[in-house]
Amino acid sequence: MKETEKQDILRNIPAVDKILQWPELQKFLEQLEQHYVTAIIRNKIDEFRERILAGEDYDLDFLKNSILCEFKDLVRPYFRRAVNALGIVLHTGLGRAPFSHGIADILHNASVGYSQLQIDEEGRRTDRYRKISQILSLITGAEAGIIVNNNAGATLLILNALAKNKEVIVSRGQLIEIGGAFRIPEIMEQSGAILHEVGTTNRTHLENYEDAINENTGALLRVHQSNYRIIGFTKEISLGELVELGKKYNLPVIDDLGSGALIDLSKHNLPKEPTVQDSIRTGADIVCFSGDKLIGGPQCGIIIGKEKIINKIKKNPLTRALRCDKLANEALEATLQLFLHKEETLLKNHGVMSILLKPVKDIRRHASRCARKLKKQFREQLEISVQKDVSEIGGGSLSTEQLPTFVVAVKPKTIPAQDLARALRMCNIPVYGRVSEDLILLDFRTVLKDEEKFIIQAFSEILANG
Ligand SMILES: *Cc1c(COP(=O)(O)O)cnc(C)c1O
Image (cartoon, rainbow, N blue to C red; front, side, top):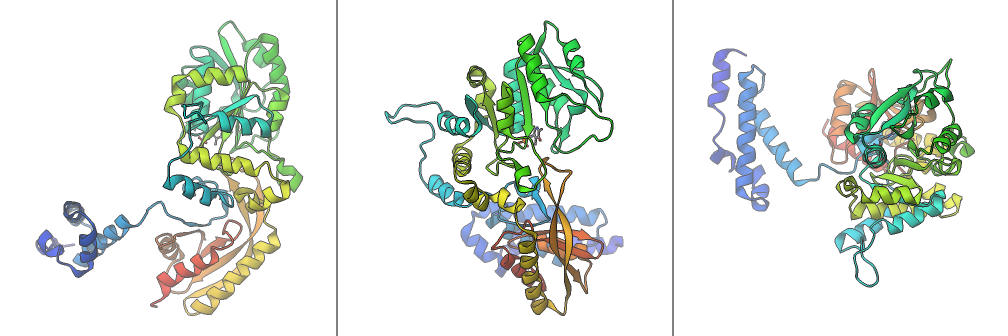
């Protein structure tokens, strides 16, 4: 842009007073405190001015649009429902596990009133973890349990409570990094424990652990590799062997399972994932896993194991700092209660399990129905087909494995696929799909039963007028 044009635009930016009279803003002015309204307008003007000065090519319509969009966003929730058509079952960006059937009602009831979070029949303050501990014991066979903010917090807390200033022995093949900057060596450092790595990336033997044990060893740690696999010439010792070693030297064995499957997925033709019950049965002293991966509950970190150790953890000051609120407790209890039901009911009602087990022919039927509707409505603008593809589990669980699926492939005729995909992500109910060259792929494994209408609605919002 030429200098004179720039000056022209800058000079013509309307005054805040003038903007406040825009008819489109009146409904916001009726609802919102005026000083917020003017602050937003000023911010947007400043931002616009900077962009123009930086040489970006925008006109005053752009400013108007961005002000109106800002107000629209301000009064609707940003944290709103979205359609996951990415085909990644546990997608951290999309809030990981979709809750199971019936949990929404429980949460609604519990959030509009007070909640029996930490109080007993006598009206006394009680142990907040009592109820969750009972149900975790029943399901997993562990002596006791407790929950904290997330599994990263659980790991930090366990290491701090059991091994501060002491060495914790870990195989080099298990020094993982998970998305969101969770790295075992760094968590270890923050916890005050000292990392003692043994073995090599691909092979670690029992004697590597045994040779590393000394008078300052505090614990033995096993970490689920979660989001990567080492294949080829490899060796890791089994949890059983680690437990034997722990017994021999009187050291606690910590098992960070990551996903924490409560049912054996391999029974259902899904890839094998170690179960929580197996870890407890094998004798791990303390086991931790996420509440919002395969468990399908709210974000939390679940810690179970020997009662003596759980009690020690409860007394640690970090436990208070990492404690979960009523919503997490309520949602987790309801999710865990599902696991007490007959497996048939569980598999049908459990959000994550029902997606993982969705029969391919159902996915195909669902995708085809949506494709037909889209074709009928948007024949002029879109080329639609249904294709075979693969979904991922994600969330660091079984993530090297792929699940068969069907996608609705959408090829926009007039705009680039990238632009249409972006517009879909900005709809009232955003739709997230994969983009592959000139196609948008909507994976129907993760599109829930009643969500097809949101997809149609999103395309209507974008394409209705041409
Ligand atoms: C996912 C994962 C974590 C982190 O769990 P969050 O609940 O996301 O904090 C820790 N350890 C392992 C092995 C994991 O897979």
